[in-house]
Structures are given as structure tokens and as C-alpha cells.
Amino acid sequence: MGPVGDERNRLWNDPLYSEALSLQRECGVLDLHVDSIIMQRLIRYRVEKRHQAGFRGQPFFWHADIPRMRDAGYSGACMGLHYPPVEIESGWWELQKQIDYLDRLARRTPGCRRVWNPEDWESAREKGEFALAPGVEGAHMLGGKIDRVELLATRGVAYLTLVHFCRNVFATPSMGVGAGERDGLTSLGRELVCRLNGLGIGIDVAHLNRPGVLEVCQKTRAPVFCTHTGVRAVHNHARNISDEEIDAIASTGGAIGIMFCPNFLSGRHLVGSDVVVRHIDHVVQRVGLKHVVVGTDYDGWIRIPVDQKDCRDSVRVTYGLLKMGYSMEDLRPMFGSNARRIFHKIRAS
Image 1 (spheres, rainbow, N blue to C red):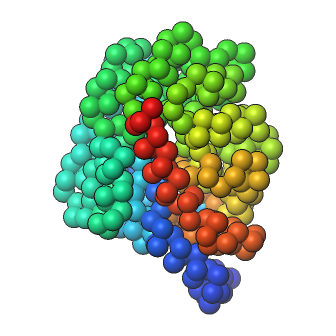
Image 2 (cartoon, rainbow, N blue to C red):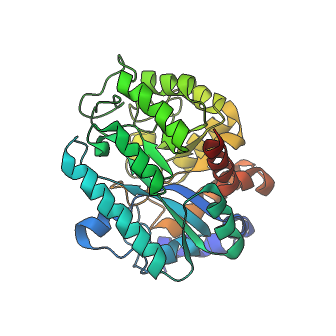
């Protein structure tokens, strides 16, 4: 049978692994960062269709689709919307096309619900529907025009990531073109925070540099997400956030999702899901489980842990947390209720 088959049988025969999968299915995982729409735009990848898993730790994509997310116990996802991180007008129009695609996807896929407000997350969960909402990864897609956030609100955008891998008129990234730790938000960036609060759109500080994260957390009236990140106390990498940033995000009532990218989490590609577990555990020990959400970054052009083939193997992280000593009751809020609670608070701010 070989080592891969032997390991699969060992896991399926482990009652704790079965409990981990049952827990995900019972709670309904809400993943705040799944990037499958990138591949839809590039190669017409069909997010509603079941695809075959690739190799273990496969690079870049083919990690997720709606049928496989359902298999993994997902109840919904925020789908990342992207454009190369430069502020040009075509980015804005590409963003509209991606939202249009998400709208069509939800309409034509049986059992799916397009999320327009916090109540929709709850309603979809109660009815067993798969909930979908857009998350815009990078304010550069506004093309420097802050008034465009008004349209994002009418289009049901769940959150806006302030910066991606390139400096824009609002903020500076922690990694990428123009990255640095000297500057916080620009004056336009501070105005953007206020606008997003007023419109009930979530603020995502993933990719933002440390001064920017701290300034957002000081200025915001609503909880803040860091949807997909690592923590520097476990592995010191520019893409990861410091304990000071973790504390600041928690002080807003917000939450942090740990991405499934071993390179950022450990400096190595070929490591298993335990590295994700270590980063989650650090956030929990620092600020508590109520400040943890799921934010895998599946299909985000990353290598995933080597013991995973696709999103169905997300259960390996849950299994690792249970093995570490977390109880099923401990972990329940992380899978969905933390995010749903925070979305309600963002809308009420």
C-alpha cells in the first residue's frame, strides 16, 4: 500500500480524526479567504464543479471548489477578488467582473446563497446553504478613487484588504513593492478607514505593515480582521504580524486567520499542517480563541502543507489542535461563530 495509504488508513482509524471532521461539519467552517476566483478569471476554472485533488503540498491552486469545501464541512467562504497590485483603472473594472461572476455563481449553483448582510450568514447556515461573499484583496483596485467604496457597499462586499503586495495611495505593505516599516496610513488611508466603518464594510489588515495595522486599530470604530497571516513570534517573516499587532487587533474585538502557507509560516515549503497549528496556538495563548477565525488562503498561489492535497485536508489542522489538548467545545467558535459575530458588529458600528 505504501506510506501514503498507510497514513490515510491510520488517520481514518483514529477516533480523534473522526471527531475533528465531525466537528467541522457540525459547526460549518466559514473560511474568510479562499482565492479560487483567480483561476476562474485566468483559466475559466469552474468553482461550482468538483475537481480532482493534486499532489500533496501542491503549489499555487486547485485547492478548493464548492463540492470539496462542502465535503470538508464548510458552510461558506469569502472569496478573494484580485488584480495585479497596481493602481490603474482597469483594476476597478476587473473587480466588477469578478463580483458579477460571484453573483452568477451563487444564482446558478443549487444550495448556494449570496451573502449581502450579516443576517445572510446566519440564514444560510440554518438552511444548510453554502454562503458566498466577496472580499476585495487590495484597495489598489479602487484606482485611487475613495468614493468607489460606496459602490462596494451596494455590491455586498464583506471586507476590503487595505493593501496587497504594492504600496498604494492608502497604505504601505509589509512585503512587496514599496514595503517598509516607517510609514503608517496616508491621510487618504485614514479617511478610508472612516468610510469603511460608516458603510459597514470590514477592514482587513492582512499584508499591511506594522505601523499601518496599529494605526487602523487605533482609529477604527469597528472590529478589524487580519484574514490570512502568520505570527512573527513563531516565525519571523515580513508577511507575519507581531504580538503588538495581535494585541491591537484583539483590542478592536477583531480576529485573526492563519494562512496555510508553510513558506511564510516556517521558511520551508515541505512541512505539514502542524505548522499552522503552532501559529493558531500562539494567537490563542496571546489573546484567546474568540479572536481566531479561519483564513486558509487556499488557491492563493501558495504551496499548502505537504500533508494536504486540497481543502478536504483542512481537517488535519483541527485534528492537530485536538491532539494538542484543545477540546471540541474550545474550537467551535473558531469555525464560524466568531466571524459571524464580528460581521454583525462591523455592520452595527
